[in-house]
Image 1 (tube, one colour):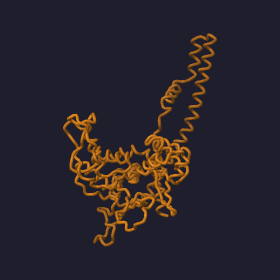
Image 2 (cartoon, one colour):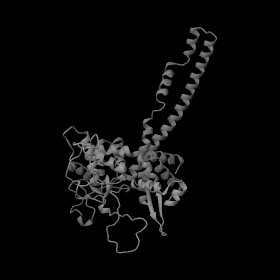
Image 3 (cartoon, one colour):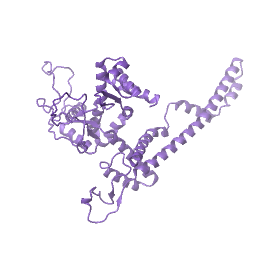
Image 4 (cartoon, helix red, strand yellow):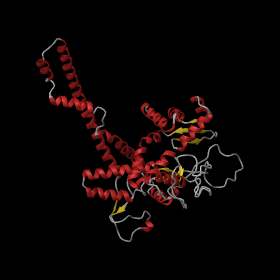
Length: 419
């Protein structure tokens, strides 16, 4: 990892979690996997603070742990996951465009908290939406739950690995760290919850309407009396699914630019039909017929013959990368030319200003000063003004860098899949 990337990770961790978490996270990024006591010793931080920092980092999937044969638990930073925090606003905005404000707040809560139960997310989002509504209107838990189910059905949110519920017949000491597992078929299975209620508005004080101090509320429950209905089932945002969505958008846009709108709509439909059944790193989509999706198992093959089609994601990613690289190369070439031209123009402007200052000091006439000023033409003056205005603005081609990163990730993953 480069020093620039480490510095960026440091800034992201400090901005989101504070100095202590940033200190522990950057230490792990620099040193690799280390056990708890070594981290505390090397960073000069107390064990209690290190434990709390690691809890935050593990909660947000920024650090993973592994139990070695000697029973020592080592922690390792997930550098790529830290850098993805830069894209949090884009994940949230994408969900807003697809699933309105409710979906936006669901993903935002998951990103802010790392992992949450569905019931906790529903209540948090319902309360936040109620706060924005007119007086007398509230958001039903059921409506938020329906949006959560849609996000799970399209794989934008997924279950987190958990400790197996099998009974432990071994009377020996517990392991130094739990082993988390997840069944692939259960990753997007939403528990059946009966969340009945509406969002609540926060009071301006800690006292209720009668002026009495409010009692300490228990953890999230269905009716504040029963235990948590989905206790132990935690959810997180599926970042790979968002990247797949961004990649598919880029492919559709490229087809529209290179061919026509009809072709892009065909590709869009094929990508949409196979977005759940196709892995984000697969080089091809699942085979589809020209008029319907073909079942994946031979036992359910159709009785008549169809021509099957797939979207070649690897080829599309390669084409898009070539276009992005060409765009960046043109940008660099243009920037080099503009830099030389701007340097020449600035030097000329400085020389003219120096001559004018010298002539003014010697009492030159106004006509002579005007003649010197006209050495810089009107187009050159306009170019100088534009240069000063746009010194901190990004060119449209520069904005494509983030798109290139998504496409490069897709290309590398697809290539590794084929090997």
